[in-house]
Image 1 (spheres, rainbow, N blue to C red):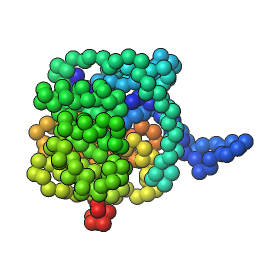
Image 2: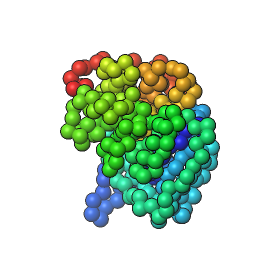
Image 3: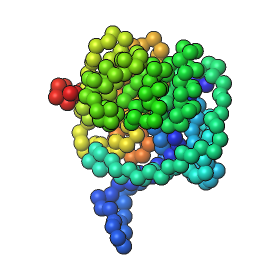
Image 4: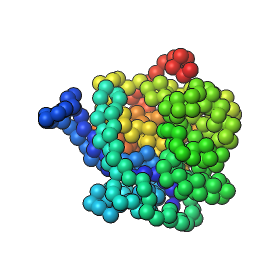
Length: 304
């Protein structure tokens, strides 16, 4: 095992349509994709696609959707450690004009305790805040062993505040800032105060503001992808997380500025494809994205 990812597993059904039926109506979608889903799950698949050897601790039911999920994981060489739930979780995603609407059907009522895992050879842990008891246990254990710990702070979850002191790389969303009632700058100060050596706030099309051990806030602009090329932004953040973990595993001595630029290239590739699986980049895809699109001009007001 090179890395362990912990989170909620979904099957994602993504479809393109300009019309949503109401009442007793029908509509035909322009296109659709069915794939694995979930924040840490998609990050694990991205890491595997980029040559990492991740393992995944996630929710798992005993139904045909779970068997579909396990087939997908086997295709990417991902070992799944399932934690039993009664039924698989589903997401229905409708991308439109660079945004996305989502309906989720989620079962996170776990029937058993999380499994004990051997961490021999592990170099990184990535969490999305789901499965909070397992997340806290493995974050504490990995921090004590000197294993890199990372969190996708897409939202403030029930034990986020308890988790953060054990996190090395905290990459959070604009929504996370809003839930805290803090500005981007104040959120970064909050992450510093929690003891996170690397902290970042992602701002979608406006890029990212982050700090490393040097302490100062830095801006990483987004790459300038024309709107007509943006097909599906859902999962792009998860690809970003999986890519910086893959970069760290491949090039552990590189600075975090390079890991994040690599991840930016990965998410730039992702938004041009429909569904999580089609969005996963290869190393060549990332290189091509970094060549094809310039950085957006920095607008200070976008990062306030």
